[in-house]
Length: 259
Length: 347
Image 1 (cartoon, rainbow over the protein chains, first blue to last red):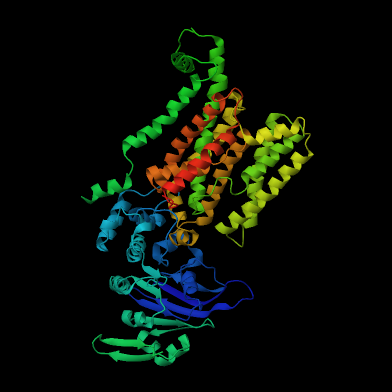
Image 2 (image 1 turned 90 degrees about the vertical axis):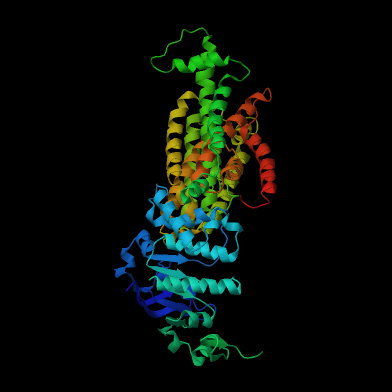
C-alpha cells in the first residue's frame, strides 16, 4: 500500500468547522482516486493533509507503510509528488529550470543539481513531448503547457504517488482531456494517483476509485461506478443530475437538465 | 545532441559577459586606490600593494603620505564599498526570491530602522564611535528578531506575517529615531545623527575592516551556498515544502545571513538605500532569474556599483556627499527605468 490514511481528523483553527472527520482511504500502485465534493468541502485540504502540508488533529497517514510523523519532508517528497493548481510564479524561470526544481528532494541544502539531474529532466520532457518548451520562460507559455511542465516536475521527483489539485481547472476542453489522458497513462505505468475535480465526468473517465467528501467532513470511498449515482450526485451538488449510458462515448455521462 | 541543448539552457549568459562582470569590480577597486584629490600614480599604487606581499620588496621611491593614503584610507574604504555593495545586492536578491516579490529590499524586516535607533541613541549619549557601531548592530539584530518572533505562528513563520511584522517593527523604531532626534541638542547632536543616517563609507578604517569583513564574508558564503534552494523557495512555501524543502530552516538561514550583512552595513556605513532592489533587478536582465547565476552576478555587479558610487561621493564636490543620498538619487530613477523596460514583468 502506498498511501494509507486512518481516521484522520482536521480542523483549521479551534472552534471552526471540522473539515475532515474520521477519514479513511488507501491507495495502491496504479490506482486512481478522484475526489469529488461541493465547493468549500475541503477537497484541497484533504489533499494537503495527505501531502503532509497540514498538521492533523488526529489520525495516521502512512506512506509505503511508514508513519509520516517519523519522516522528514525530504523522505515524504521521495514518495509523493504534488501538482498544485495552475499558477504563475513571480519569476520567469525557463521551463527547464522550473522542472529541475522537482529534483530538490535529491539535492542537498548546500548543493546544486548535477548532470544526472539535468539528464532526468531532459528525459521526462521528451517523454511528455514538451522538449521544445525547455528554454521558454514558464510565465509565457499557455495554461495547457504549464500543466504539462508541472506534471514533468512531479515526474522528475521520481515518486510513487502523484497528487493533483484540480488538474483541469482553468484549462480549455482539449487540454482537460489531454491532462486526463496523461493521468490515466501515468496510472498505467504504476503511479498511485489522487486528483480533486469538480466534474463527475472526469471521475467516470478515469474509472478506478471515487471518493466523495461532504460538507460534514465525511468521505465515502468506493469503486467509481458504485459511488457515482444520481442519488449521490444530487446530495453533493444539490442539483438534479442525470446519469445515462452514452453508446458512442462508451461510458456513462453526467448531464444536468435544461435550465 | 540533448546535452548540447542542456548546456545552452544552463549557460544562458555568454562567458564574455561573465568575464566583464567579474573583472570590473577588481578594476574599479584599483582605480579607486589612485583616484582622488591626492592623485597617486597607478604604478606606484601597484608597487605599494605588491610590497605588502611577503617576499616582494620594491625600493620605496614614493612619499610616505602616498602609502598612508593608499593603505590606511583608500584600501579599507574600497574593500568596505565592495563588501557593502555585494552584501546588500545579494541580500536583496535572496529576500526577493524568498518573498516572491522583486520589490522587496534587504531592510524589509526592520533591520535598518532598528540599527538607526541604536546609532541615534549612541550619538545622543555621546558614546565613542565603536560603541555606537556595536549598539547599532545590536539593535539591527534585535529588530529582526522581534519581527521574526512576532511573525512566528504555531510552528511556522508565514511570509505574509513576516512582511507585516517587519512593517510594524520598522514603524516603531522609526518613531523611536524621531523621538531621539527630538530630544537631541539641535546645535551639535541632531546634525550628527542626521548625517550618520545619511550614510558614509569613509568612516571605515583599516582596524575596523577585519571584524566587520569576516562575518560579512561568512554570511555571504552561506547565502551563496544555498542559492539553488532559493529557486525552490520562490515557488511559494507550500510548493517548496511539497518539493521536500525544509522551508522553515531555509527561511531562517536566509534571514540570519541577510540580517548579519545588512546590520553590519548599517551600523558601519549608515543607511544605503535602493542597492538591494536595483542591482538584483538589473542582474536579472543580464543573467535571468535563476538564482544559481543571479546570486554570483549580484556579488560582482553590486560591488562594482557601490565602488563607483562611493568614488562619486568623494570626488564630485569639495565636501563629501553622503552615500545614502547618492544611492537613492541614482537608484530610484534607474529602478523606474528598469521597471519600464521590463514592463513591470520581473525579468
